[in-house]
Image (cartoon, rainbow, N blue to C red; front, side, top):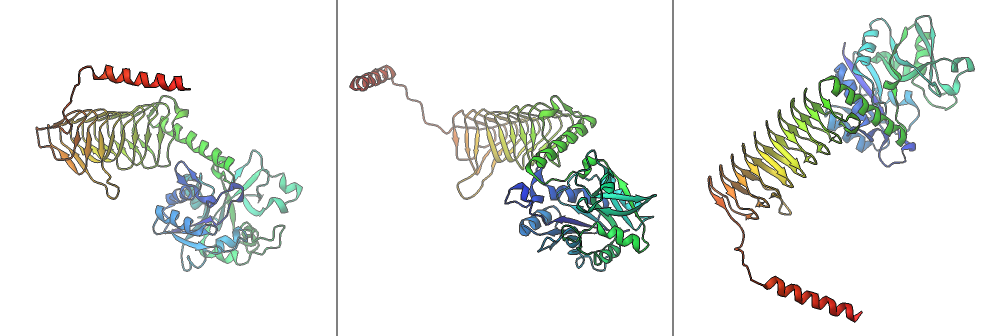
Length: 450
């Protein structure tokens, strides 16, 4: 059965007190909307429709950066969830299959849960995702009759008896696409809020003789984010889960609570992650690599046996081969470091390639930017770059070549050659003593004048 996703993301999120649309606030380096799209991707949807409103242009850009085929429709007035889902009707006209309604501010629905909802659709016309709430609060209540879902009652409209029900509505619904829109067309707004509730389709469906049921999940999956405090709580929940999964997958975290993951961090078995490491989006660390304390990795790939840090920064495009060493206060961006090469101290490597077993001395800088364009530095296999070398790109240092410490290298250094780019030292005997005496006298005169 084909599946379509309808993801609601039109809300302003006034409690966020932000110019950014609510669904674009990030968790683990990705907008909440992207988390919802990733969850929905588990059911391999043929179509995905995002309903945007506030900040629609930004929402569209974020959605299409994750899935270029996503279609965005606009809810110009926020008249309730039923009205919001209805905006997707034209985009899904003629679609034959199931539609699943998700929420851009509910980022933790598990793929297994959505698969269970699809399975339940085999015997029911509508499937609602519910949960047993520790504190039902103002959630909508799921009213059951025998094994069937009879109706959903919003808290504002519920009786005291209905408010006592602990089975609550997540808002996530699966139904045949045509059936869903036929039911929504019959929803009215005669309620305490004057809104078109998506939840009303259950009562309408039951009155028409259709079958509805509930698939239950853990309450944490249904966590909605409406404020900065809830966003922080969602981040903490994501990190806790990611750390636990990493440990179960055979990753060593020496101080788990101090390590922060991105939504797409990949760590190989037997990799070792020391305290206070932060992963930005797009980082992959292979089995057997070690990331030492206080390092930051983003958009990079670290191969087996490599050691990174402490206090290292790997930026997008950093590619470390097997058994490389990247040490303290080293930054690497858009550069490849071949097997066995070492970049150990106080160095910037940008827009460069480093050959096998090359050694990059402390304080080396690839001067890659001229104010307008980026230029590349190539360092050959077995090359030795002396400390405090400035490599003014575009420039190459050949295989087995060397540069002298303190050099500014502006021309290519051939294989096996030594490149020196510094003036000859001049030593003036006794000059330091005379200079110090002169400065001391000047300072004394100034102090006496005050």
